[in-house]
Length: 381
Ligand SMILES: NC(=O)c1ccc[n+]([C@@H]2O[C@H](COP(=O)([O-])OP(=O)(O)OC[C@H]3O[C@@H](n4cnc5c(N)ncnc54)[C@H](O)[C@@H]3O)[C@@H](O)[C@H]2O)c1
Ligand SMILES: [Zn+2]
Image 1 (spheres, rainbow, N blue to C red):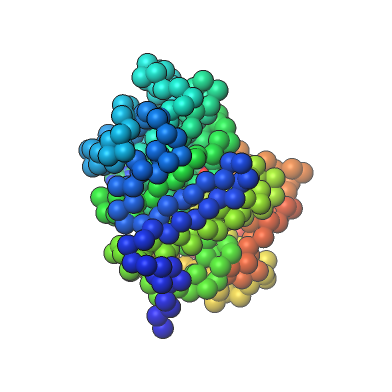
Image 2: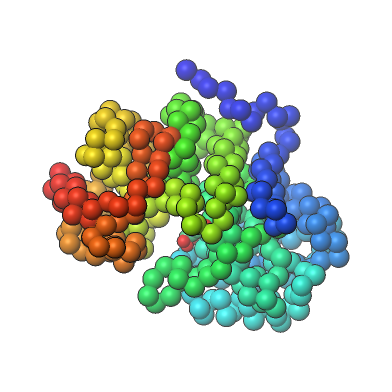
């Protein structure tokens, strides 16, 4: 069965626009192949007379900085740029200081603009610098990884890491525009694309069973590029935008986006946030674990959890804990890591569980002892 993507009906070549409905802070996500070329015109329409500072990393700058500068220049927007090292290490106080200093030295002021050109690392770092310099500069996200296009560039969480843990220093600060050019993903390493795909699958699993079924049938086209990729990114952004519009500061529903992340973060931390296990790979393992845990709690049947595993394995994501290079620590250490990430209150944890594919919900009082017993079984399997 081939399901027609809902967005392909839109005139070929026209971008798909998803609005994030946050009142006075609402903004558009413009999705499509080649949309980077329209960046200058879109920025000029929002902020006439602005100058821009582009924040990027070394990998992305080699591939896409020139085209970004040209897109801005075509609308008469002059730009300076600051380039950081690729990787999570750049979400540091030291890089934050460097980026802030560069913005100040370039005399970027309130009427101007910061452009975050890169993956989630650059988006989080540049967004936080934009939130901080002169008490807030407007910023635009130009996400270049799949993870950034479907997740980190949308919703306004910005920040850096502390020696005590990830994302502990930051701000909720929304961009004024997101331009997601799906062609930029052609230069993304295959492993990074696959890891980002775990977040795309997450949207189906948490809230849209029909989308998950569509992905099962069309994932090869999503990987290949073209309209299916744009559709998958648009559906993902629409769901994230709707959730963020309901609950910008994560007091309720936004937690649904953490499906697979309680287990996943523990695996990611156990592997030292390293090349051994990318974030999306950890989330694939985390979603398999979450659905397995739902079977244990008799919320779903085993066939449903097997369907999740089958799809993630089909795209080449890890689904079995033994696939983590260098192995995982024992259950005590994993529970410790989980407790660091999520507060355990009187032996209870908040988990995102599901009553089926596409039916996730927030479960606030899951017994840590049950999670522990489940993980111990999984590690032994
Ligand atoms: N703010 C949020 O809501 C949110 C949500 C999820 C994740 N995050 C954060 O996002 C970060 C992970 O983001 P990521 O997976 O994009 O990692 P990343 O930014 O490190 O990018 C992954 C790698 O791909 C390279 N790259 C990116 N785009 C490329 C392109 N088009 N061509 C070639 N190479 C390219 C980068 O240089 C890097 O080496 C984490 O720090 C995580 O905490 C934030
Ligand atoms: Zn994630």
